[in-house]
Image (tube, rainbow, N blue to C red; front, side, top):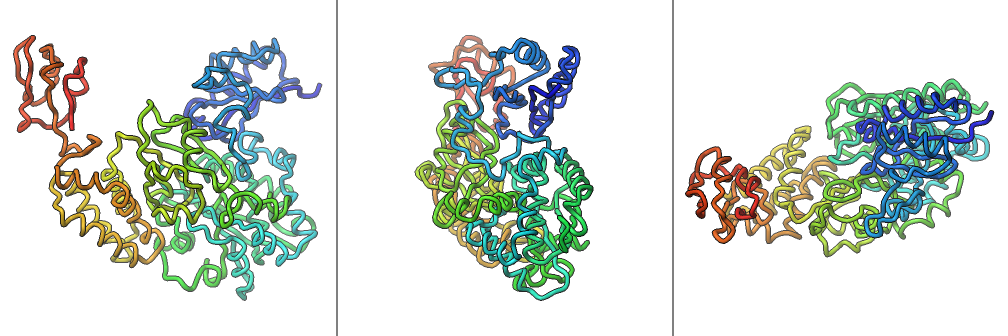
Length: 596
């Protein structure tokens, strides 16, 4: 009897952390108990992207999308939907404004403006079954280039498509491939940079977990184009599920002759090996990554020469990130004009963003270049949590900047973000609200950059530490006006004199927050106040006499006994002895304690 129904269960890291593995088991148990094993299949897929509402179960071909599924609701989905043929209403997505229950994925606001190219198969196929990838046109592009196209023809298509590197700087992919091909050498390499280290970023991880063959196919096409026979996927050890599925994909591709010798019966041979990184952020920089693969310290080298001329083992090497490779096969199959028709004049195609922070719909989105920040945050992201006021969005990870509300209608592309003092980066997008202190945000990213600096160049090794010292001084209420001038001057020096791109962009959080939120810096330095109430040393707690009922609750929780007053009378706080722990603020039920 043919399969009449499939239950697709999200198997990304986020949903697995929410127990989707157990949901999968329960669904299979219930299907077995109903004697429907020959009619209904239950598959683990990759990330659906809607992480806020996971675990997710999608029923096909009915196209019904269930959210926040637990063990109990998994049983009811089988009993109601699979057995009785009626939609289980309780786990459908509910539109917040209209309270309408939406069964179809395409009608959910989170998905409406998405165009999934890099993520095309995530949530649709079993990533551990190569046959499902092949059924979704997998490896057709590789077959096409090997049997119908010259290497130069492949490069020409990629150049005309306008595809730019999705890993950070946005360098034209076809130009990089062309430079590597023109380098004279009997041995060349292809490297996939999967060392995704930005705080809050999980784009590449989700592609590797949900559609690993798209990356392998893209790497093989690149290898054919540049004349390479071997490649490495450099992936951080913190991605065990991605590594597991990559290994399965590589072995399956070898078994079918899609990796290895004489692929598709041609003279072209190509194979791939996984290199597991130890989690050093600097190894996201291509020359530091090469040093790491070779067994050396993860430190960048001076460029030129570029890896396209002198790379791994001193041989010409092409390096692209996961998302870049995932775009290659669709470009080959659909044509350069198709891809170039999407996006903006100088930024073609789509971009995957990891939407996180103070936003209602945390998740993974893929939108055409040129989509505005407002559309992403308020339409796909569902707005700010708790109805709070939007303050800023930080793009590009530690190398990016913070963009304020006045630029929410800016179309997102490489050039627009750079003009705002930020960058595309790999695609991290952290949303902040009125409760965030922008000085403290800058300090957070500087702490990260200091911890992750390889220490090779003085500008980054010493300069960022001095920047952090100044920020610490300011957030502790010890800042002086001349510190602000020094902060800006030093940040510009680090930017202009660091050896590699990571060092050069590490001051962006400082420079962008000083540019757009200078009033907060002034409040910290001049007024000794943190407007957002975040910097502990600057907080001052007050009891509002009109609201205090003398319940003594605040005095009872004060660990240093500096709240005084008789029962049923107004209390006062001795601020000289206050350690600013905030327990009184959290305990008061009458809103009688404030802080500023």
